[in-house]
Image (cartoon, rainbow, N blue to C red):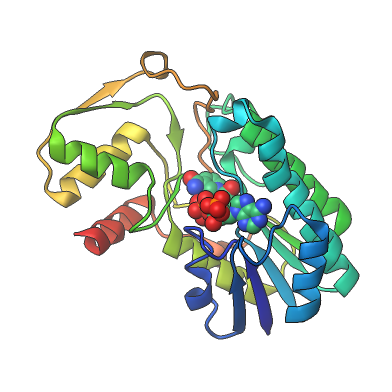
Length: 274
Ligand SMILES: NC(=O)c1ccc[n+]([C@@H]2O[C@H](COP(=O)([O-])OP(=O)(O)OC[C@H]3O[C@@H](n4cnc5c(N)ncnc54)[C@H](OP(=O)(O)O)[C@@H]3O)[C@@H](O)[C@H]2O)c1
């Protein structure tokens, strides 16, 4: 199959060509494809002539979205809308990636595919609008919700905590729980999902759940960092965008697309950055 990947320079986008290596993959970054520009999207689909488009492009600055609502909706709602229009016109499916932050976290348990979204933040609202556009405009879609995504060699929560931990003790939020997801595991699971051809909404995140503090403790243990990790509350660490207290994800659908436990992702990440 010929697959066009949008957002190729991102954490996930840069890993997809290898994970999808059984296919012919054309991966293009923002410099060649601005997903918020319908003419650019139509042109890219026409010239690549793919049989599937994977959208790994997104506007991911969760806190900035609170003050740049238009930027967030352009990247996260208009972008997938344009991709859904162009792929529907070409008669091909679209795989779009979304987030656990479409949930408000008030259930107090992991969310499955049939739970009702209710985003707390502008980022979450913009991502939910993107999901809805994809579902409405191209019936042949995969909407893949993931969470707390990280890869080696990128600015993300684990790499930030490792650099802070090398300098001294850290204080980390312990009352937000989620499913940390090692991006190579997600890329591999996306390749398995594509092979099933099973359209619909999928929760694909590291199996299990922990807090940011639990994630940091595992990271430090595996990196051999002795720095003290102190658990703090969200109230002690205010951020512009509200976060769900528990946005762990589970899938109640096909177990073959399940990702490894989140702890395994941390261990592989630590080996990659050591
Ligand atoms: N990171 C997380 O913790 C997390 C959690 C849950 C879900 N997700 C979702 O997982 C997916 C992959 O995330 P990621 O962490 O790989 O993101 P990332 O590293 O931020 O990569 C996103 C890429 O999209 C590009 N982009 C932004 N606007 C664009 C546009 N208008 N046209 C084309 N490209 C554009 C970005 O380019 P610039 O850098 O130039 O802006 C960047 O290269 C996204 O859908 C994200 O919402 C991520």
